[in-house]
Structure formats: structure tokens, C-alpha cells
Length: 205
Image 1: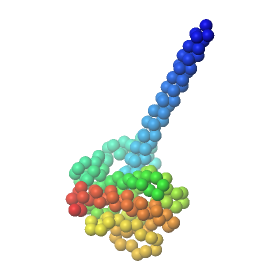
Image 2: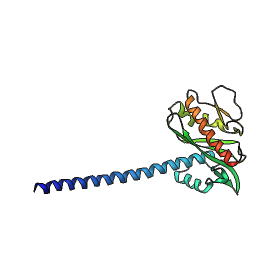
Image 3: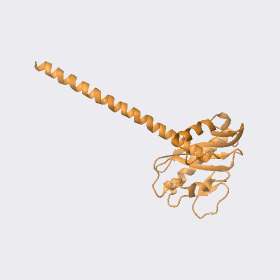
Image 4: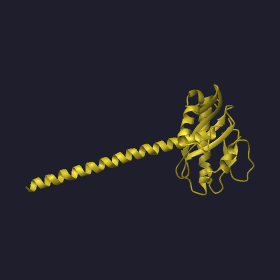
């Protein structure tokens, strides 16, 4: 009788544990799928925001996703593995993903380049966890707008991020004040991605 009770207790605990474990696993899978979907949407929004005439601030998430799928061409060897925007078969712009280690955590973004393969259209970030009020200011329009119209170099570093107040050249922007580490790391992230793209495109040897 005692042995039967022990066996009952063991089987009871086994089934209870299995039941709740299945619930936890199912919830984790559901949550993970949702997290991945949100990350993909954030990426698509960043791409649309830096390509000409695609961003619609009042559009729903579904509408933005549909626009991304309809208008943005996937990367390939012909584009240096950058996304592209074309109109009537004519290349309008490249959208190059950039990614690397920031001061605290990875920084991920998109830099768009005109069809001349040197003029920057814009830059956007869809993942970062830099210090609020300091490094996180890379998200602000004041910082990002500096990149518009800048000319990436094919000889030296494609882009340089210089201390505030310094005179800027065509491939230079000002750093975020008080966020030297974030600015330095972001410069490397941009240059690593752009240099690789230039080499794959045959722009830089």
C-alpha cells in the first residue's frame, strides 16, 4: 500500500510538471515568434524611412509591411548585398544594413545611398541600448540629419565622426556631445559596412 502511494505521488508530480512545462514552453514559443515579428517590422520601418518617398507616418504596420514587400528589392551580389529601390527598372537607391557593437550593446541600422554610389540619403537605427540622454541621441533627427547629402570617401575612411565644433569635410559629421564611446563605435560600424559594400561593388579595391 505504501509503495502504491509512493508510485502515485511520483506519477502525479511527473504529470503536473509535464503539464506546466508544456504551458511554459508553448508560451515561450509564442512570445519568441512575436518578438521576432516585431524586430522584423522595426527593420522594415527603418529601411522605408531612409529610402525616397516610401515612408508614411500615418500608415499602419500592415500597410508599411506591404509597402516594404512591394517596393524594396532583396539584397544580392549585384547590389553589394544591400537592399535596393527601383522605379520602372531604374535604380534609385541602396539601403545598406549596418550592425556592430556599441558602447553597451549592439547597434543596428540602415544607411541609404543614392544610385551614384556615394551620396548619403539618410540613416536610421532600429536597435540600440545606448545611454539615455547621451549615446541614445544617435536616434535624434539633429544627429541623423547631418548625414544627408554627405559624400562617402573611397580613399580614406568612408565616413568620419568628429568632435562637436570641428570644421567638417564632405564625409564628416559631428559626434554626439558627451558620448565619445558611442560615436567612436558607430563610426567603426558604419565604415566596416560601407567599406565591405564598396569592395563588393568594385568601388574600392
